[in-house]
Figure 1: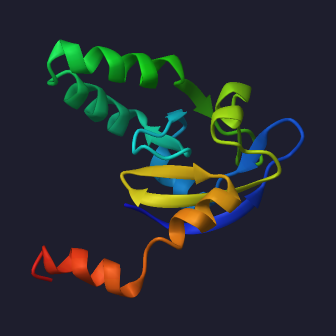
Figure 2: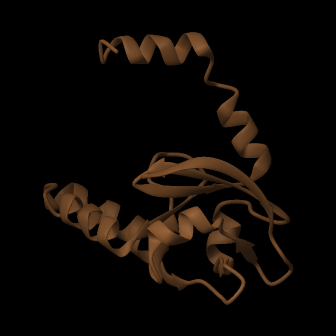
Length: 141
């Protein structure tokens, strides 16, 4: 399970460090793509989780799945870690995610999200203890 949040700088070549606890769960090769939650973040999936996502998308009617596939697959890249635990975020994805000098990396259970720090702060401020408690009530937790 991927969880936790980390702030890291992005170097001039577009590389960002991924914490070791995330690297262990992602494996040697994984997928980075545009986020599909309606937010300007990037998502990182292990090959296993990517395959599950692709399978679920395949269950949609073709009129819906075609658009999702175009959006998701056109901006998806295979990625590996360098010897220092960094990944190179492709330029197209850095532009999409508005990533320049810093990134906030969040474990989201089955995948990672990589956010522009300012966009993350804005998104994170929309959640309050009260709003989270209200959502949790739906789970009777």
